[in-house]
Image (cartoon, rainbow, N blue to C red):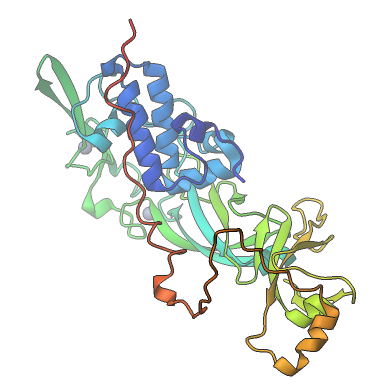
Length: 402
Ligand SMILES: [Zn+2]
Ligand SMILES: [Zn+2]
């Protein structure tokens, strides 16, 4: 259901991989590809970028829904230095790629961060479509000072950091010199100082104020898990920057009766034995206000586990609302007891009993009793699905055929 699998392929994991599996896969690949171990630096960067995206649940859902294109639309993201991420995860020093610096705002106008919000939607709402109202809290430019933070001329460049907002210290690490950036403490990283008296009273010199804005999210018929609704430029406002987007990610809630596979629906139906053998009717309550009545024609036999399909009763497709199909997985409920007096009727109606297997020569027969099995000690379930998630690394010793 994901749009692209490139990032998953780079890490050699399926798109269903858990966070732990991703981390494990990245660790394995990164250790192998690390330039320090003679790996390809470009591939290392690509794998690291893939992990950087997939390990961030917001970026991951964006990638799943819209692929790499969806990520680059985010703008303002210079991406992380692969060495930084590697050190963050596994510890150890930096310096392979010439140290930090220069990342972050690379080219183009600065944009504030996109705001990604996940909305849980029921299958009913995805079937019928719905408008959901959300209240968004965001920063807007202060109207009183028009984003200046104070009176004209009140805003001064911070002398401590020359307006850069960061201070840089150099640290000697063996043969390399590392640059360390930290926010300037005089101006708390803003690069500006505003005299207390001249500060805008409305925003207290912050240039922006927090505002609640209602958003109407149109959940279209047939939308899928991970699909997004974008409100362009509705994210935080900040002076001198373009506002980012608000991205609503549709999260399909699990349904108690239906499962969804693309535009098809799957429902489990339990039939009584008589209906299964002799025909009758059963009902399926649909996702809107309809109940589907299904007739089993006498003469047809429904078997346990049969899969049938009702055409056109699945989910509507997103754009054109063409319906998928409804698959019905049938199971049969057997009665617990049967009156021995009516058994002759069954013998009349059903195919004859299977004859007993003949006893081969040299075998003795022995009569035994069939008792109820202790449910807790059934050998056919449990006990084997313990944590299988152990590290199965390649063998340490390999054939050296030189
Ligand atoms: Zn400063
Ligand atoms: Zn203000």
